Amino acid sequence: MDFDSRFTHLSDKNLSREPWRSLPAEIADVIEPELEATTDEILATIAREVPDYARPLEGSFGRGVRTGVTEALRQFVGLIRSPSGARGPGREVYVALGSGELRQGRTLDALQSAYRVGARVAWRRLAAAATRAGVEPDVLSLLAESIFAYIETLSADSVEGYADARAQLEGERRRHRHELVAALVREPPADEADLRAAAEAVAWRMPRTAAALACDEEQLERLATRLPADALAAALDGVGCAIVPDPDGPGRPSQIERAVGTAGMGGRAVLGPTGPAGSLAASWSLARATLRAAEAGAIETPGLVRADDVLTKLLLFENTSLADRIATRWLTPLAALTPKARRRMEETALAYMQQRGNAAAMARALGVHPQTARYRLRGLRELLGDAIEDPDARFEIELALRARLQAPV
Image 1 (cartoon, rainbow, N blue to C red):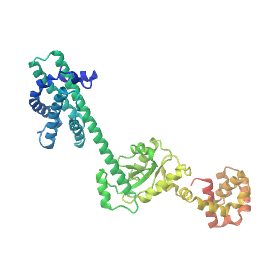
Image 2 (cartoon, helix red, strand yellow):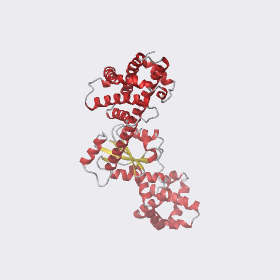
Image 3 (spheres, rainbow, N blue to C red):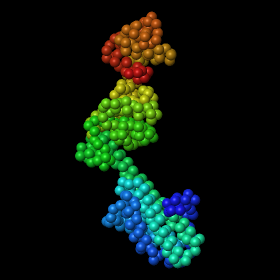
Image 4 (spheres, rainbow, N blue to C red):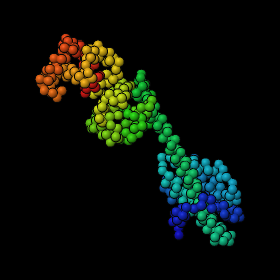
């Protein structure tokens, strides 16, 4: 059986984590003289068989690989002599090798291949030395098992180092993205040079125009994966924020709407108005305010909400006390009616404002017979008097009615 198949076979059998504890301590004296030559052969074989390492083992890279191989063999012999001893600082070598692969932009494939090469060469040379020394077959078998299990331990250290480095790198990227998003929506606008430097830190190309999108913070990650690839997302003050470049460009509106729809956002995603990419404070402020209105039920538009399409509703939501004041001024005469009659008269009044007093159009809007609409209109005139003929009064009355009835804009 060749090494690779033996290695896989032994791994599949879930080797004991530390089989070297059962080796006779004398084996260390047998294999120690072979360490220097074994190190040289391992390095030469790695350079020959692992494409990513097929270069002179020089500089910091070469020193790192040589240190890894030398320390591995030295530590292995030490563990045979003192099975209860700790591995010591040598473990950090292999954690560092794993993190180094990430910094070099590589996967762990090359390093894992190097570990397999090292184990194969080490087993061949150390087994030969043990055989010459007359070591019994069962001890040889245990030596092989120990080498393979030990290499698995080193490999696990490197996997840990790689994962930690990736988490750290992602944390840094997340922090840089957050800083850039915050800078793009700040008021007053950030300095252009600072913005470009922040954009370069996350490899984001500054667009000419963009818009800020607001959503629930918990839904941001799911939505971000569906938005155009050049969108930039981060949570700001408990609200999900995405900067969407060129939101009005060809195909972009439908792409954004589709992203919100497939993310299951309902009406809880709001796109602010488009503006210069370096000055999105107004877009973010409007998107965030509209999101508050949607969350409160004042805006019920399904799917993506565009802030510019619901400005009147937002105006009324943001100025509830003022709308109530206007309602008190003009709609007090309706207060004496029963709730049902008052609601009916409010709907009639709003239809009158919207249809410019046309009874037939009012009837269609209210879903009643024209004669019924005329009858209600007479009652409205009796309650509100000449106010419904005054343009300024009609404007204020319509605002108050919209706030009260939440009629579609």
